[in-house]
Amino acid sequence: MIYMVIKMTVYFGENLKKLRKANALTQEALADFLGVSFQTISKWERAETYPDITVLPVIADFFGVSVDDLLCTDTAQKDVKISHYLSLYDSMQLKDAAAVFTEFQKAVKEFPNEYPLLVRYMELLLLEMQRLKKDECVRLSSEVEAAYYKIQRYCTDDSIRIRAKRLMFDDLMWKYQCLGFDEKYKQQAETILSSMPSLNDSREYTALFLHCSLEDWYIHYREAIEELSYLLQNTVVGYYYYDDRYSVQDKIRVILLMNRLIQLLDTEENLTKNRIHLIYNNGHLGHLYAEIGDTENALKYLRLAAVQAIDFDVLPDSSERIALFYEQEERFRNMPMSERMYELMTKHYPLSDEFKSTAEFKEIIELLK
Image 1 (cartoon, rainbow, N blue to C red):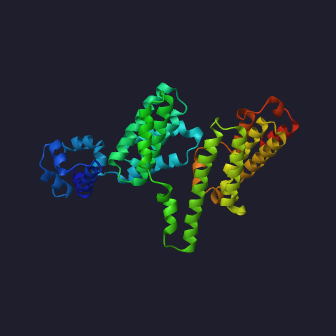
Image 2: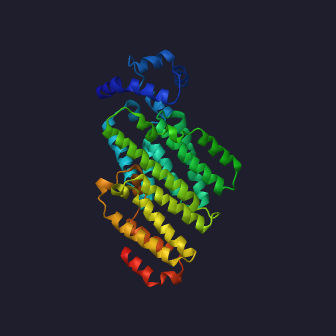
Image 3: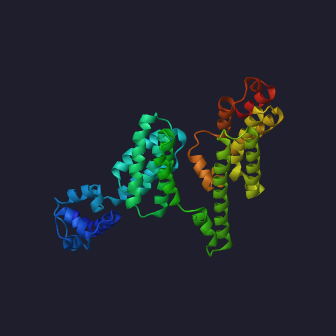
């Protein structure tokens, strides 16, 4: 009992105040729910008095936390557990996503008000939806929505709130495309989009105006360029390459221009930081040229993609895989790039059997084995 009093003296008041404010409650509103005066709540928060022990489960249940969390007992153990879950997510590869999702289902039940965990759970839900049937996805989509509204209502960290908006936008677009093109989902997505910051308000751009040393400024400059490269690759190439309203010639032209831009954004010695984009782009060019019967260019770009993939796989992790978009790409890759290109060239690219039977193509495949 003495141990409990010491913990309450140190932690209970400040934690009650934190939970109340996180849930946008006044002292009067909380007092009304608990059947006490607001002066009582005020004294609890100032650690002048403490609630009866029988009231603690009621308060904990109201805020959706455990009594231990309410009293902030075992804080060190809690921090270790949260750190474990975050590390599990950050080191995740695609093949691990289902297992990490299962772990995060436990995490958000154990720590329902830890928003760094909850926003990552939203992303894991969206990943899980990619491999399930539509009926099962609808249930997971409702979890995405519930997590989103909880974050927007109670979380005070703007970076988490914005990230949650991005994920909710993805969920709404899934609903729009998979649930009958209902305009209400598109309108909700547009509302979220209108509330998100522009590139001019981004961290990477704003950091360029910090008064700092030239060395620090150069780091911010590199981060801005790397993020811009990632965005351009996904918006420009992704938009054209996956949209069949554009001709093969249009797609080739756009990818060639993007490759030139990637090379302009980086110096030759640092080109490895964008190479993952170049590998995919050159692989795309290879099969696109094959589609229009340009065998010479098809083999040229497929070979280039293969050689670059092999070179990429021997890069030292600590020195070259530090760019922001590199970490994002690495997190969800479940195989080396040479294996990925082998799989694309042998199973996924729409290459004809005649093309695959040529000695030149077989030689490229041998390089990747």
